[in-house]
Figure 1 (spheres, helix red, strand yellow):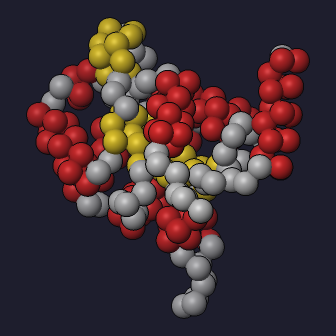
Figure 2 (figure 1 turned 120 degrees about the vertical axis):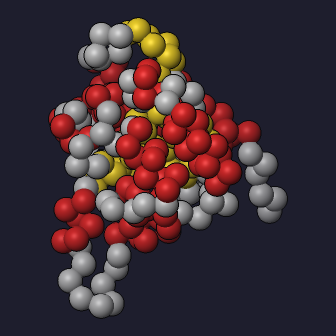
Length: 207
C-alpha cells in the first residue's frame, strides 16, 4: 500500500511539472470488465492528464472509490445538465476538442454495434460520432465468447477498422459467466502499455 501511495504521489508530482502533451479520454461501456476501469484510469493518470466517460450500464460495475481522486468522470446526466440554452457549451463536443486520444475499455457488444452503425444515443457514442479520426482511438472489447464469435461482431469490427479505430484484442480466460473463452478484455496494464508505446513511437514534431 505504501509503495502504491508513493507511486501515486510521484505521478501527481510529475504531472505538476511536466507539460501534458497527450490529454486522454478514457471511456467505459456496459461490460462486467468495467470493474477494472479504476485500475485503467490509475495507469494512465500516472503520466497523462485524463478525463473519463461512463455509460449508464457501466456504472453498475464501476466502483467510484477505485477511481483516482482527481479524475473527472462524466456521465449521461452531465451531458444534459451542462446545457441550458443556445450558446452553452456541448459536453461531447468539448470532450472531443480537449482529448488527443480516446480509449474505450471495456467496449461492450452493444456499444460496438452502436459505433459501427453510427448511433449516438449517449455521451460516449456522441463523442465517438463527433471524433476527429486524425487523432487515435483505441478500443478493448469485452463480451461473452458466443457474442464475440457472432457474424455481426466481425462486420462491426471491420467497420470500425475502416474508420481508423485501433483494436486491442481480447484475451482467453475464464469469463464472468463461468465459460472459458477468448473474449475477455485485455488487462489494464496491457491496454496502457499498448497505447503508451504507440504515443512514444509517433514521430515528434520538429521545432
